[in-house]
Image (cartoon, rainbow, N blue to C red):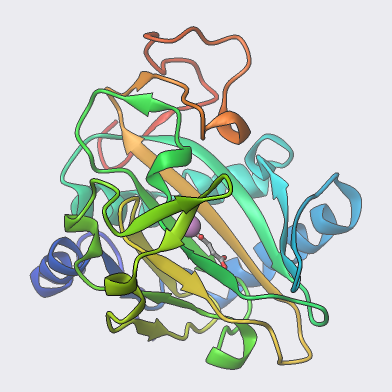
Length: 258
Ligand code: SIN
Ligand code: NI
């Protein structure tokens, strides 16, 4: 079966991404690539220090931060020309890789990923508002394994009006958001979703009996400027000063003709 490449990505898919704020791109990685990446992801999940996101109703997910700095295989994924080339076509902008994460949704005691959008936790300003995440499935992720759902068009209401704050939680959905339709996107291993940092999204619980393993990589406008905020503490960068450009090789420029 043919892989999807930046060259074969249809104009319709690009339009879909721009109007809805997310898109499912099937077959971005070959079976061989998935096999190698899954083995490496499992190794890192077993050996590296993980961060756990726990809520009252269970563990949302565990993740290994910056796996791209821990192995050559996962660095290749974060900079993969097929993925970054597609990201660049969707964003229509020169992009820089900010970070990748190996994400595990456990088989038991798991909670769903609550409704949120990503932008407030990213420490930058400047550049164009094109930040997006490539979420690569390394195992099949049917609805029962906790695939993601997206609120189409929500990236166009970016001024925070879709959420309100309560008890320090900035992601309490307003009633109008609660009742907006969501699109649920099951993925086969090797498929990818791309979502805009302002797109509201969530994921279900993992009730499948098998771990959900994926890698999410965030790309931003190459001209973004470091600007930490009250909500970005988990993503702040050691050694960077506010107002500085992201220029070092922790955050390489990616895409078709760097
Ligand atoms: C998830 O993996 O369940 C959510 C990922 C995200 O919020 O981008
Ligand atoms: Ni998110």
